[in-house]
Length: 325
Ligand code: AMP
Ligand code: MG
Image 1 (cartoon, rainbow, N blue to C red):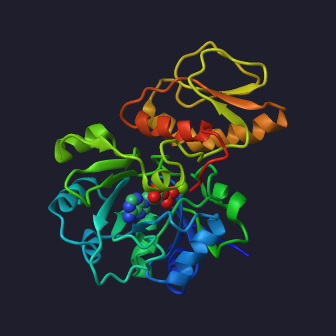
Image 2: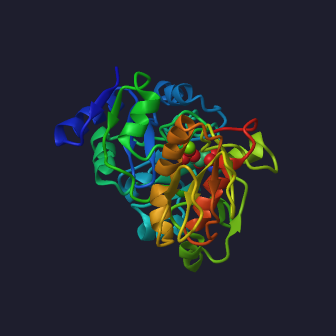
């Protein structure tokens, strides 16, 4: 049975003890809910891959509570220190070179010499990591390829009885995953757009390239992999509706489907990111009940956090036969 834990002090300590003893705890961050395990314990990390059905060549992000702790595991990097000071705690993941004597499980890093690290902002998540006294490996707390969870209830619906506990940390403020920035080599590269925008990073990093993420390179060279996928199919940039479609709207519109929900009536991209995954889930379950076959999505501006929203929607709309995460 999976324990459902409200975020009392006692429960956070209980969840931390479960992590310390090798168990799996789902917890909320400002991005999405993560499925956490002690990153130094290979058995625990292996359980994450098994529960999610995640390919074992797709490495995990390792979460810390303090900047000093991060630098116990990675090689000295001045840019990382600068970025960490500015954006942590927050939705930025850095890819860095690992120290040779690092005790992080090589299963968590998929045997790479690099490691993905982040300090989340959610206070309950920070307390959990702190009490566990461990670096915590945590991918999104969903079955691979599905929509990321942004409430404890979403996790419960998908992973009940498969993990040891769910720590309710409230709903995720940002609502889309962290930006992944690779600074392990000379030229920084963005591997995934996310909660920190390109526009936020360039004053510190200079001009930035977008690079295919590891999982795309390995699994589906040259094409977007299916991910964040509802069971209904997804049609992007719609300016008209077909009769069997639910509508995911953005901003003012006269379009009206049998089932319509608006990411942000005032066209606010932060509000849209916050609502994205919860509204996709809602359209999927309610749309199916109404016999609808597709979700039509209105155009979303591709700048700021809109970049991350467009990336997730493109993956949600990608052909289903390819990869998952
Ligand atoms: P998720 O766990 O769903 O938030 O996704 C984490 C992402 O981080 C995946 O796309 C991984 O491929 C990527 N990642 C983790 N570690 C590394 C690494 N060492 N180098 C490059 N990408 C990484
Ligand atoms: Mg994920």
